[in-house]
Image (cartoon, rainbow, N blue to C red; front, side, top):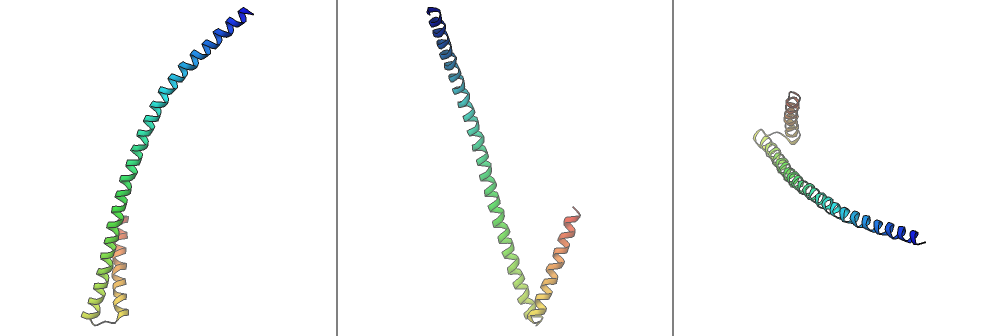
Length: 113
């Protein structure tokens, strides 16, 4: 009986010691892992914010560009209508042909790259 109690105490103290050591090691490892993953997440969030800012800036530039193109097309329409004294249908047909030719030139320019 005494021998069993001594073995039991030895096992329990060994178990407590190993559990304490594993808790200390795992706490240090988990803190390092948590810190490094937090830095990675922060880095990813910073990159996402930069990408969003660049994307919004590019979208704004494209919108302003297209607004300018629309205004230039309207200006061309009224110029053709007033200067050449054409009716609306012929003016829009002429502008459509010009835009179509520009699109074809841009398309062939893309294929040659």
